[in-house]
Amino acid sequence: MNAPEIFKTVDAQWDSQIVPRLIEYIRIPNKSPMFDAQWAAHGYMDQAVALLAGWAQAQPIAGMQLEVVRLPGRTPLIFIDIPPTGGASGEDCVLLYGHLDKQPEMSGWAAHLGPWQPVLEGDKLYGRGGADDGYAIFASLAAILALDQSGAPRARCVVLIEACEESGSYDLPYYVDHLAGRIGKPSLVVCLDSGCANYEQLWLTTSLRGLAGGNLTVKVLEEGVHSGDASGVVASSFRILRSLLSRLEDPVSGRILPPELYVEIPPQRLEQARQAVQVLGEAVYAKFPFVGGMRPMSEDLAELVLNRTWRPALSVTGIDGIPPLGSAGNVLRPFTAAKLSLRLPPTLDAAIAGKVLKELLEKDPPYGAKVSYDGEKASAGWDAPPLSPWLETSVDRASREFFGQPPAYMGEGGTIPFMGMLGEKFPGAQFLITGVLGPGSNAHGPNEFLHIPMGKRVCACVAQVLADHYRASLEGLTSGVAAAAGQGQHGDHGCC
Image 1 (cartoon, helix red, strand yellow):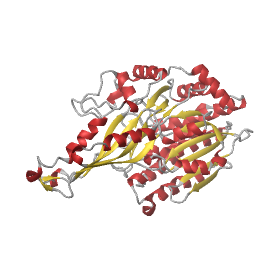
Image 2: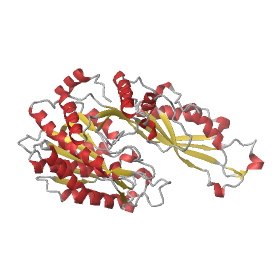
Image 3: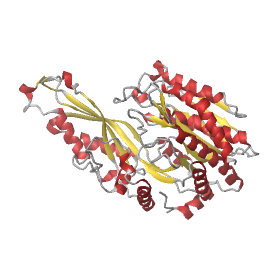
Image 4: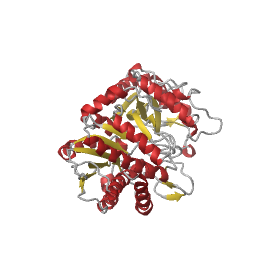
C-alpha cells in the first residue's frame, strides 16, 4: 500500500466532502429514541439517514450496494455491501460499524456554540454527534475508496450504521439476525465509535464497560404540602432516595458496595493500566474540566484508569420532582425521581446486574414509602480477544506511518453494546476498536467536538489495516483457528 498516496486521498476527501457533510449532519437534532419518544413522527432520524445514505451512494466505489433497512416499529439501519477487489473470493469479509443517533442537548455550551449549531474553529468541528458517531460512515467509506483508487486490494466489506446505539442498541440484534445471511462471517470487525487518550497516536480499545440504567422513584405523598406543617412528620422523599443510593454506593468514597457487581480484573489489563499511566501521566485526569481546587478521586493514576475501565461506578444523570431554585416554594414535595447510570465491569452480566440493582433499591422501603426502580437498559460490556500477530503488526505499522508514534492500548469507560453481541456471534473475529473522542472532545456533554486531524489519521490507519487484512487472508491467517493461535501467543501482551 502506498501510504503517502492513501493519506493524500483521505485528506482531500475529508476537506472537500466529509467536513461539509458533517456540518449538515450536526444541524439535525436526531436524538436517540430514549431521548425522543416521538422520533419517528419528528422525522429527524430520517433526515440524518437520508443525508448519510445519499452521500454514501454518491461515492464511486465499484459494485457497492446500499439499502436503508426498516423493520416494523424499529429505528432504521444503513446496510452497505461492497464486493472485494484483487480477486478475493468474498467469503471472508470485514464488518465496519458506526451509529448515527445522538445524545440530547445538555446544558452548559459556550455562548457561541450549541448542540445543533456546527462551528468550525481551526482543527475542531463543534456540535453534537460529529465525533459520536457521525464521522464513522464517512471514514469507513473514505478508507475503502482510498484503497480502491490506489489499486491496493482488500476483502469484501460490510458497513452497518445503526440509529439506536445511544439507547442501548436494543434494535440492533433484530437487524443482525435479519441480515445474517447477507453479512456472512466477518474475520475482522472495525468499530469507529470509541475514544483516544491523546491525539498523537492510534489508540486501540481493549475493553468496554457495561451499563445498567433506569429510573428510581420515591413517592411519599399524593400532593405537595406546606413544609412547615409536614416536615418532621412526613419523611423527605429526597432523604429516602439518598438513603437508598447509600445501599448501592458509599456516599464518601463513591465505591460501589454490592460484591456481585465486581469481577476479577485480568492480569494483562492491570499491566495495561500501568503502562497507560507511563504514556499519559497526569493527562489521565487533567483532560477533564475540573473546577478550581477539585481533585481526582485517587492520587494513584493507575487506580484511576482501572476505576474508569474495570470497576463499577454510579452517576445520577437526571432528577425529577424538584423545581428550579427560582420557583422552589416552602413545600415538602410528593416525590423525587433520579435517573441512574451504573457502569459495569466489562465481563459482568448486565442482566444480572440490573436484577441486583432493582432488588437492592426496592426492598424494605423506609417508612413504607412507595419506591420503584424501572430499568431502562442493561447493556453488556466487552473484553477484547488478544490481537492476532498479523493485526498487531498492522496496527503498529499504521500508527507509526500516519502518526509517527507506536499505537497505544487501553480500556474505555463507555459502552458499545454491539461489541459484546458480535463477540458472541463471531468468536473467531478480530477487533479493531478505535475512535476520535480524545481530551476535551466531551462526548455527550457541552462543547463536544471532532478533532479533524485525528479523524483523518484514524481513517488512513483503517485503510492500512484493510490492506494488511487482505494479505493475511491470502495466507490463511484471518480464520478463527489462526485467531485462537494468536491468543495463545499473545494472551498476556503488555500494551500501553
